[in-house]
Length: 210
Figure 1 (cartoon, rainbow, N blue to C red):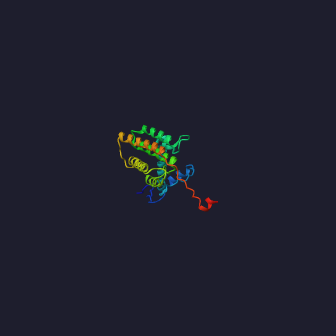
Figure 2: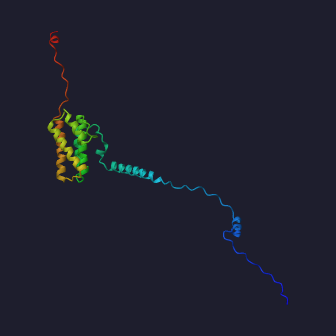
C-alpha cells in the first residue's frame, strides 16, 4: 500500500526581540518629516528672578496709586509761588478741613502745612526730617520763643500719633488741632524775631581820639 504524496508548511515561532520587518517596511514608505526646533527646558532657577520682578512691579503700582490719592497741596511739596509763607500755610490749613472725616489724611495735611511754613518763614529744614530730628533743629532756632517751640513740638507729635500710631481722634479733636495750627501760624508770624546780627566792636580809645 502506498501513501500519496502531499505538501505542508511549518510556521516558524516568533523570536522575542526580532524586529517587525513588515512594520519597518511601512515606516520606510512614509515621507520624511521636518525636524522640529529644540524645545527650551525651564531652568530650575527661573523662579528666583520671578519674585524680585513681581515685588518691583507691586511697589511701583502702590507708589503710583499713593501719589494719585494724596491731596494736591501735600503732593507738590513746594511753596506756592507769590503767596507769603503765612498766607500759604493758612490756606492749606483751611483746605485740610475737607479731610475731617479721614483723620490720617487730615493730620498729614496739617503737619505738612506747618512744616512747609516753618521752613519758608524760619529757614528750618522741616519737610524732609522726622519729627525727632526737626525738634532738635527747632530748639537751636533763635527766631522763635520757647513757648512757641513747645506748642509746635506738641502739635507735630499729636499729628504723628494719628499718622503712625493709628490713633483715631474725633472731629472735635481734629478741629481743635487745626485751630491750634492756625493760631501758631498767626502768632509766630506776628511775633517773629529778627535774625541775630553781629554787633560791631566799640571803637578803642586810640581810634576815638584820632
